[in-house]
Image 1: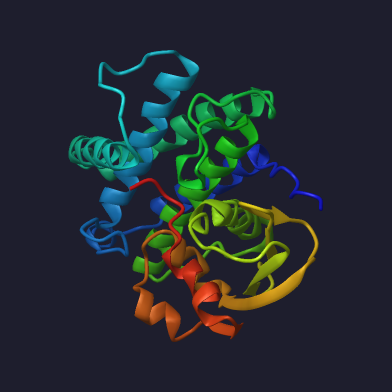
Image 2: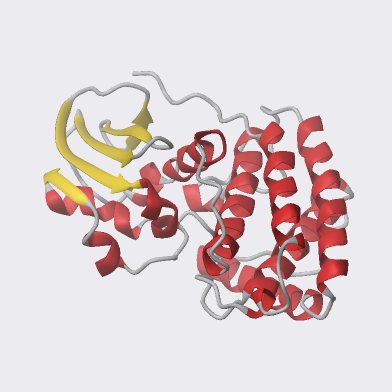
Length: 277
């Protein structure tokens, strides 16, 4: 059975970044201090985080300037390290004025966009996509992950300040497709008979269908349905991104998700996280 196609997302980064800059320029002083879904972070904190991560990644992957830090020995250690770096970055960059933050985000977005566009999509990325269980990933996957980060943090800001979202098929469907690449890793401990299929539908114009197929001893995402469908899970597009980025509680998500067939198998997707920390 055929695997999914690569996600080509480099051309979307400048689009998302331009929308962010336009959004931030439209904010008033009170908007910057509005709480967001990102737990303790306000709008300014999220903007500071986006700046920090872009500058940090450019320094490492483009310029080869690696921080003098011990290599994480486990996924938990990686999450702890990332959380620490994120906190430190937000602490520093939220001190900047909105005008300076916006100017630096515009510059960082251009530099990052040019860098990702220059990469061989099938060469090895500097950082693997760990939330998909990979210890080696192609550049196209890392670039798609970059899109998910910028898209979902911008969406957090838009929800907080009650501005129209960026839930368009052009921008949101690739984000969903990237998130769904975590399914085999998320289900790695769920046993099932070979040729079992679990189907996941995201409803709405930005959504689609993803098919998780059980081979002899592992799960694999496949392009077309096959085998015996054991469960079908339907997730509204409005909450799909929030499920995979810790933006909604499991109980609240469960009340909006429909499952037919094996409920336990289908609902396990609510525990899937497609961010590191």
